[in-house]
Amino acid sequence: MGILTSVKQLGFSDIALLLLFSATILSQPVQARSGAHRAAEQALGVKIVLDRIVPDTWQLSNYQPAGFGGETDAYLQILQTEFAKYPPGFLRRAHVSTIALARNYHFNGNHQAAMPDPCSGVLYLAIDGAHGIDSSHYLIHVMHHELNHMTEYAIWQDQYYKWPAWAALSPGFQYGDGGITAYSDTGTDYYSFVHPRPGFLNLYSMTGQEEDRSEIMAVLLTDEERPELIAICKKDAAMRKKVDLLNRLMQDFAEDLGGFPHLAAVSSECIGNSVGQ
Image (tube, rainbow, N blue to C red; front, side, top):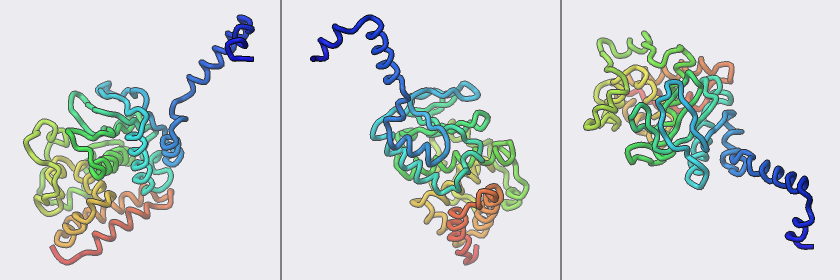
């Protein structure tokens, strides 16, 4: 019996049930169709949203969802690999409950590669980077940098906390007005590792304590960039002290998670190269 003949013999109630069944199948979460999506959610223990807009606390985000496909799957595999460097449960401890994957992400009109929203527990990450920069090591750097902002909020309930112990490592230095400075001053290279003064990786690090720490954390955990930090640490005692202090902060934060072994290992690569300032 053919399909058409079978359908003709169905009654109204049978057809209604068939349509309801088809609608139910089609309405199932699309993420079940992506192995990379499912694997990343299971490995990281957080919800990853890539097929719809997630509103932020301030209602200032504007972006397109990353969607499904090969580019998103490749990003998810990188994300899973990089966040596996943290101890299990770290993201939840850092108040990350949702990761929203985006394209062409803007916050308050600024084109950005990411945005932390610790108030809502959402970490926004743009799989296409920002301003035409989308290299894998840049995307990885951004992942770790923004996660550190979430972590600091979990520690201090303040994304812009002025830590006296940190300030003491750069006596007399006055930070700028925060990372927002870089968005308005597009003619300055804030991000290259020019080591502008002892204890600082780049000009962006000098815009605020929170950016200073987040840049160091990002470079420590980005394998392609870490050799530059190791080279700086060989001649910069202030930088070695910052790496050590940041590592100790994170070990305390993750103590009941079994510590943060990966960070301890990469920090020792820098701190161990103490050959004078």
